[in-house]
Length: 439
Ligand SMILES: NC(=O)c1ccc[n+]([C@@H]2O[C@H](COP(=O)([O-])OP(=O)(O)OC[C@H]3O[C@@H](n4cnc5c(N)ncnc54)[C@H](O)[C@@H]3O)[C@@H](O)[C@H]2O)c1
Image (cartoon, rainbow, N blue to C red; front, side):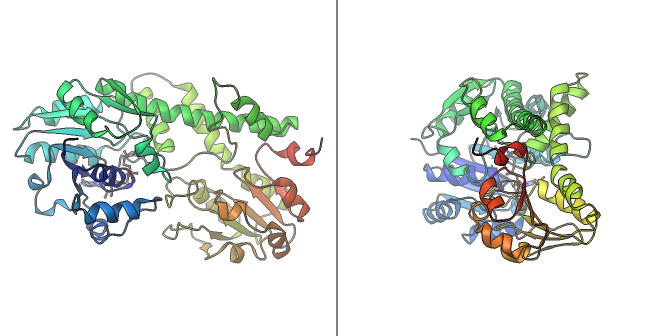
């Protein structure tokens, strides 16, 4: 393998994983970020994000001298290698569009300041058409030739390192064959199908993939609501549907909907792009609407059961959008807590990792599940951390106050065991489920 000089711009979830894994493959990598505190942490061996295995790999690659961290304060030119990955954020703007401010700023700056030719690899998720626009606006004017490759990222937080080495596919979009060759060579050690295409198709693959997965989630959530109405068991329905190899078992877990830094913003952006181009993407609109509605289920159920929520003590278990990450971006927990507080409930929330999140005013974060649920009239399980699934629910039921409701927002708990423990168990589409367990 030929060693490449690589720069990764943006040392967040995607950039850091990219940098660490490429350095681990033997390349010479510099990760650059405008956040000086983040760079300082990384330089001293700590990770600003939680990702299983990242601290160990960070230590190994930093010690080997193949991984360095820098801010661009002393100028970009010396930081730029032969291949430059862009992995800065593309958050959701108020309109629903992807906010490309950071991407444009970075591409414009590196194109204008480089003192040598390089290949620019776009890992940030950007709408179809963006690459072509960046090339004509910034790269074509650069004093040195810059090849452009769209290389969307598909990693899952919590399994990001595993996904780097064993991803389903590596998508590379470019009209520059030598740039494609250079980037494909970086994935030599990765066990994946490589798909080469044009820039706009690569960009579209990313949005289509996330929108499809989000659709699967909203679809099974709609089916769960039908199960509640029909007295069917969503668990069995999901298994039965997922056994069809054309459908597959993944993303068929009913619950309070998707969150995170990708699905909500990417699905909204796809809706926005479609509308802007005069096309109304009805399916995507419905996916967004269903997902928003799912978040209201726990509060609706508690209101129906408890009546007035003012004065009720509610424990919220889990703040991250899924287990094994510290990411709380677009987590349903925040909306649910805000609604509970708005209705006068007193909320104590606990999460094993998300200690940095700012909760809606009126809610408090506590240091363990037992403090949250002792004396609580109801518990809302938002994130299926194994710590919550494996909780001693008999002891929990004894510690709770009447009417001891547990709303399982992820259908992750054992309904029968909880009811046997004296809890009133509620979930999503499992209404007929536990009562008819032995039939
Ligand atoms: N997180 C995921 O699971 C995931 C998965 C696939 C794709 N993506 C996409 O990858 C991109 C990055 O996502 P993320 O989750 O890593 O974001 P992040 O917010 O964790 O990291 C982005 C980093 O970019 C830095 N940054 C911003 N402007 C900069 C600039 N001008 N120069 C240098 N650094 C700058 C920020 O300080 C931050 O550290 C997004 O487009 C996202 O949609 C994310």
